Image 1 (spheres, rainbow, N blue to C red):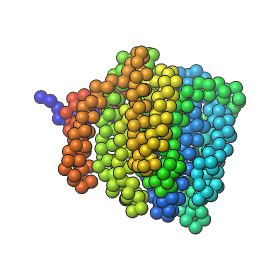
Image 2: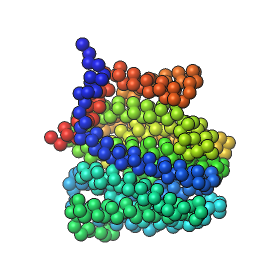
Image 3: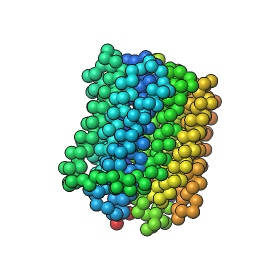
Image 4: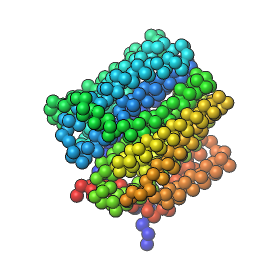
Length: 482
C-alpha cells in the first residue's frame, strides 16, 4: 500500500543542508521585507520619475558591487574547502583584491551615470551610492558560509536593511532631497562592514591579516572568469533599468524598476541555495561523482518545482502585488511584472548547471553563458523598450535568462556528472496547464493563486521521486561529512 504524501512529509528530517538554507533564507526574507517597506515608502514619497532615478542608481550600484566582488568570495570558499591556504592569507587577499577594484570602479560608475541620464536628479545621489561600495571589500558573507556559521551570514543583510530603513526615515529625502537615499546607503554599508570586522575577530579568531598586491593579483587571476560572469549576470539583470530610462522614459524606468525589485529579491534565494551547496559540489565532484549525480538529480527536481511554483504564484497575483507594495501610481506596472516573473524559473533551475561549472573550474563557460544573457538582454531591451516600455524590457530579460540556462547546460557536457532535464518536464507541463486554466477561466487574482497552488501541489504529490529528492537534499551535507 502506498504511503500518502502527508505521511511521507511527516517522515522528513530537516537535514543540515536545509537547516543552513533556512537560516540564510530567514535573513534574506526579513531583509527583503524591510527593503520592500523602505522602497514602498520611497515610492509613495517620490515622483515616479524620481523613483525611477533611484532604481537606476541602485541597479548601477548592484553592478558595481558585483564588479568589486569579482568572484573572489566563491573562489575563497573553494580554497577554504580544499584547505589550500591559511585563513588569514585568504581573507587578506580578498580584501586587497576588492579594494583595488573599488578604487577604480567608483569614478567610472559616476561618469557612466552622468553620461547617460538627465540632470533631473542631483549628482550626489550616484556619488553617495558609489562611495558606499568602499565597504564591499569587508563584506564577508562568503567567509562565514564557508565555516558553516550561517547565523552571521544571515544577519548581515538584515542589519543592512534595518540601518537603511532607519536612515531613510531619519534623513527624510522628501524634504532634504532624493540624494539622502544615497546617504542612507552609506550608513547601511558601513554598519555591515563594521559587523563583519567584529565577527571575524570574535568568532573566527582571525589574527593579523596578510594584505598585499601579489596575493590580490593571484586571487583575481583565479576569480576573474567567474567574477566577470557574475558581472555580466548583473548587467543582464540591472542594465535594462538604465536602458529603459534612456530608450523610453524615466516613468517607464520607474515602473520596470519597481517590478524588477520584487523579482530580483525572489531570485536572491536561488543564490543562497547554490552558494550553500558550492563547497559540497566542490568536494564531491572528484571524490564521489556518483553521490553528486544523485544530489543533482534531486536538486533539479526540487528547484524546477520551486521555480515554477514561485513564478505561477507571482504571475497570478501580479496586479494586486504592484498596487499593494508600491501604491496606486504603480498599478500599471502589473503587466511588466507578470511577464518578468517567468525569469524566476530559468534563474532557479539553471543554477544547477552554472554552479556545477564553478565547482569543475569551468568558470570561462559560466562567463560565456552570462555574456550571452547580458548581450541578449541589452539588445532586446533597446529593440523592445522604445515601443513597449517596461513590458518590452521584461520580455527581453526573460528571453536572456532562458539563453543562459541553455548554454550553461550544454557546457556541462563531458563532466563526470550532469544536471538531468527529465525531472523538469513534469512540473513544466503542470505549470503550462495552470496558466492555460487560469487564462481561459479568468478568475480573480486570489482564486487564480489558489488554482496555481493546487496544480503544483498535485504535480508534487503524483511525483513519486519528489519527497525522496527533498530527503536527499536534506541529508546531503551530513552524508558528505560522514
